[in-house]
Image 1 (cartoon, rainbow, N blue to C red):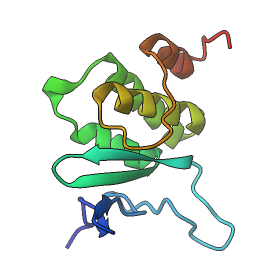
Image 2: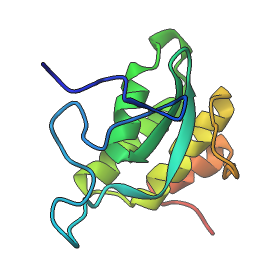
Image 3: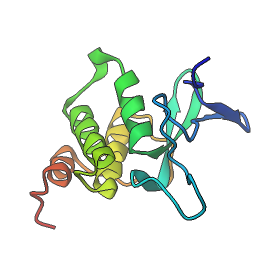
Image 4: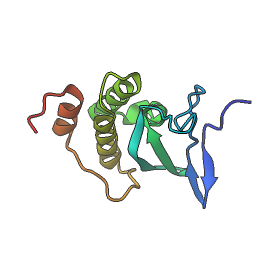
Length: 134
């Protein structure tokens, strides 16, 4: 039997597991050891109809983005996916991936985290490409 794709219910809300569908553990493997794609703070998203889902790392975000219906995808979805893949592979900063993912979740109307960090699509693109002036 494979991993629980839908996560684990916690207090009436659905919370994703710490290991992903590929058997990667995104928590501490040993005391003091931690995966490098872990977000500084988890992002809560409303995973209708399953409830609130906790996105703890770039791989959680990648899985969530891949589950998103093709007909609802937009430019920011692609940027979030690219940024999270880069963070997971070690090619990009995890903080930038989280910002772009949160921006996409806000634009999509599924961000359940408070407070949410807002970015517009242009700023999100700058985060991914590193061409921002800030």
